[in-house]
Length: 288
Image 1 (tube, rainbow, N blue to C red):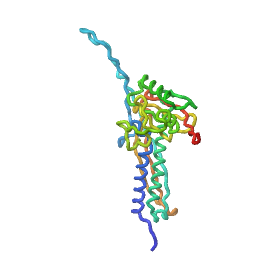
Image 2: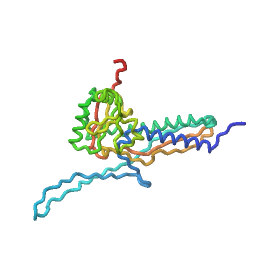
Image 3: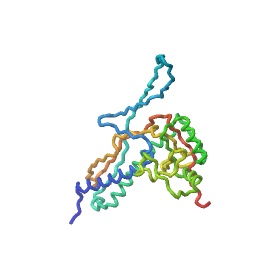
Image 4: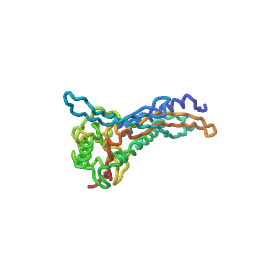
């Protein structure tokens, strides 16, 4: 009996693939989980994010009226989204075979690609934080003294009360070795308020001065890897469409095109609440 593909089997297979892609994406983009998230309402094309300045409270004298007026100092940021996407060709022959492993594999590839793109868009914002302020320098090793200095400056300059650090795993390795001898007998639980489900594999178990430290392999590796220290409210991501799919039949190709898109935008909320950290992330020696 000849084998045939049906619309139903394609729909089921693509649904499984998209489900796998979404799961993979959600769990492979650590920077997405360390910043503020916003959703674009249906029918809107722009998000307006308000910011206010600090006020000053002064002493009062009995019997004297207050004459000083404080300014709210409100400003706004306008944020829009843009599309990303990919096209996958599913041949009739592949569909007839309908191997579940193939769909899971393709879904994982797609999810990894989506996660990497979104994560890299957030990472690309690091170098512009605080008008380009950067701690460290090319070739400098990320050590406890350096991290402590970064945290001290961030606290003194009032970056925020919900600080976090993220850097390349190779840069973090020297810090872990210095602080723990390369091994933690009792891993520390992930700080409250952060998603253990999505961040556990990126959690280093280290906190310096109360600031949790995470690693992200999507940060470019080299003598001048750029990570960051920032408050959660420094950066944000606006999502209009997390992931969408459409199918189109191509009879002459004997295949179906599956187009996957997302619509989002990564942006700075408050430039003054973070700074980039430039340190080396060279491969560690495996023979020393």
